[in-house]
Image (cartoon, rainbow, N blue to C red; front, side):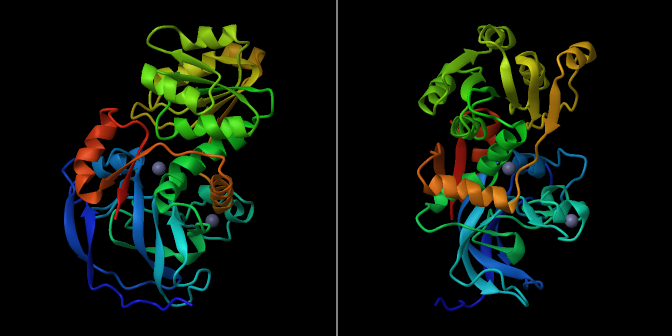
Length: 346
Ligand SMILES: [Zn+2]
Ligand SMILES: [Zn+2]
């Protein structure tokens, strides 16, 4: 049995002091654990585009600086706060976006905890995984099964579960054609989950090397949207049963819509800064098109994601970097210079 280690007095963490200014690596005092919380010694933490939006204060509801981003943290529980009974010291856990939910509202009790209005979010309203330690609510961490590399578990904690859920929400069945718009940190996993669900995948991106990666990961067809109209190309294949709009551009959403066959489903996943897309009413009604938003995934979804990875069914494309590279890494992600996911090793 593992023994709780001495609480750290202070630890290194990447901190946002002001929106749109570089993060600094500070020594931050370890906060006291609130009831139900645990302390986790972080081993790995993935960099998601949402962390960049958080650091920029891009969204209508903003975090309160100073704060530490990161909602793909994975680490070992070192200390239990009062009443934290759901995990034990020594457990490896993931610290996802949904850091806390009320547990009793309609959404929480009907398996839709990610819609809870009382929710708090890791790396946003609660300090996140970009530090040597993080505090988290024991009920909302998810155990990482033995044998899974923490450097893989980190990107699965947001990118993985987000795409796993989007494929679930889209309702992919075997023989369906699934169009994946955007082959990056999210898209490379979307291709794999759509294929696991039995779908045939057509991947769309602007760069040939990303399309090559898509083929390696199981896409049967690829379309370079710089060279041809993806909607037309996918209609030539019969049209998509589901189109996953991942790329953060309204144009990609419109193209994804245009790629659907009648009765198809457009799944909204990406969050473009430009928050509008124009879609036709007539074709939507006559074609009985479905449109649905998908937001991260529940603890159950994340358990399933880990189960699939443990069974060798998914592969992560990731680049491991030190936390000190946080500003440079954010710039590289924004410039599209990262193949899929940056994971900080703590
Ligand atoms: Zn994320
Ligand atoms: Zn709730």
